Image (tube, rainbow, N blue to C red; front, side, top):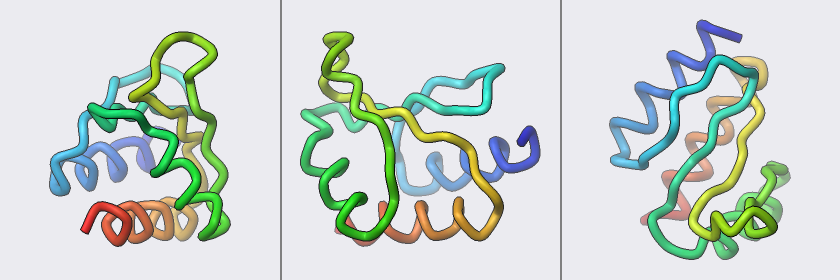
Length: 83
């Protein structure tokens, strides 16, 4: 999990997406705007993340750190969505 978190941190920095570092197995990602469109687009691509609107964190979603191939799929999907 630690290695994959570092991979995700580096990739998120490369695409200029903000996040909160964590000591857990998930990362809070900040889209700096309402994250619902990104969450829906990820779901459409088979990637499940958890929106944080219920906590009044409308711009954030929670990503559970997965296996490397799952994390690569997430990063590629996010890059595509943000184009």
